[in-house]
Image 1 (tube, rainbow, N blue to C red):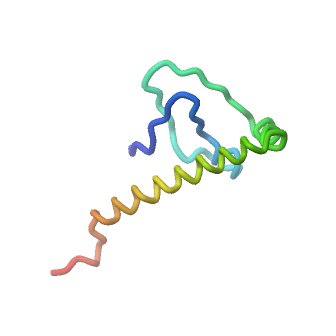
Image 2: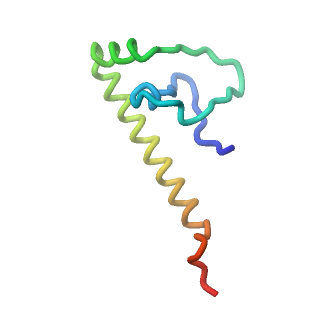
Length: 88
């Protein structure tokens, strides 16, 4: 298991599955009591259509998450030997 992110109050998850019509890309485990709001695909797209700023904020958050993930991956790749590229 790899810790991908720690979310807090008013954070969201599951947007990739909604947008890409795919399975979830991660599992979630709460560290304490949680109150959630589940939104199905139809309501999700209705909300974005009626309130475009929701879509803008969603894109902004997704871009920030991608940037963090890319940075972390780069750090891991920089410290992980690649098989076949080791000098003797």
